[in-house]
Length: 529
Image (cartoon, rainbow, N blue to C red; front, side):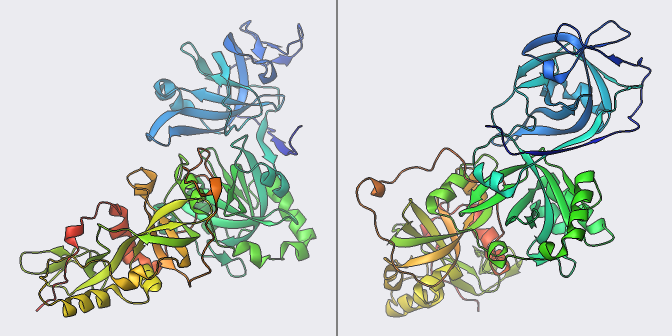
């Protein structure tokens, strides 16, 4: 069954002319579709490209090219390209890493080329940007020449649009990548009623922008722009004279995140707004004709939090392109992990872990000596939901929200009742923390780089909501603990960042690895003189 795809193309009236190649005349011969050329080589059309070596000529427009990387090893796999020939047929191209240096300086997006000699290889099965089953791969004897004086009006671009329903039905299939066009509803949490502020410095650091987009009368969709797509959107959005209202993003990957459809960009994605290309201009015309539809906002969709099960979080971590992200997860506390410190001594101001100096405690973040140390929660708890079990690390205020008391109060109470204990004594797990066993909470869970690199499976809880009813333990096979699925739930397209109130200690404490903390280092706080 063919997918429900809407295509949009545009033709060039004046193609780029950079060489003295002779004009070509389209003709058909032997069932193929070659065209004659002054150098007596057949010119093959993309629809006739087959597997194996070819000593012939291809003529095409280079729509786009990008580096393909191994997300695990962070190495370059090669250069991928989206090409289109004079009949409007698209195909994917590939240049291996060893040949990139030869061809990359001559590549220009939108330019016309002739390629002599190439190899037709089987297209990859996942994340394809073109519809064909064959990829044009540059071989050892390939020659790339700018094409001039072409009588054929090569299309300038090619778009393949999916609607909400088709994206929804293709969630998590890792199949062909399609394009989305629609009108903006929210940009980084800001509605368009007042022009949103997109911080270029923040985008350069996080390389992420989250927008909510609606296609005509369909439901609102979350669209995560990552890396170059985020930077391009920020640049276009901020440089526009008026507040942009229409966005078109190519080759997006549909994922289900917490039960909600989310679209995420890939390395091949491009971003267009308002008047950039014909489809965005056509959409602006539709908005002008349907203002009452374009102004509707479904608040339930645009404000829905990202709620995942434990198994879905582990599945996200297993995704090769996953990044640090924040999720919400409802789980029941099964036990408090013994044998490790349940607190650390932090700076009383920024909560960063304090270090012992020659005569007093020091804060590496505030760069102050002789600080007043304060006990902060860093307790490891075993939790479960209906899908999986895990270890959460209750950090800072998250521990206080579960226990109902500050860690400093519990530590002080212990030493007051046990005056014979020295400052280096590790306070055992207090009863108020043990009393939390059996409670069910909604945790704000942070996935860190240490989770993504496999250094730890412990997830960091930085915020906890009010207790809920305990989750029932499933009987029989459903109670067996299994590993996360091999199939990723979402793409790199992480989600939101930690609350600003947590940034003071989350980055300094958690990102060092929750399981790297030595129990003996959590001792009685030493107050300054």
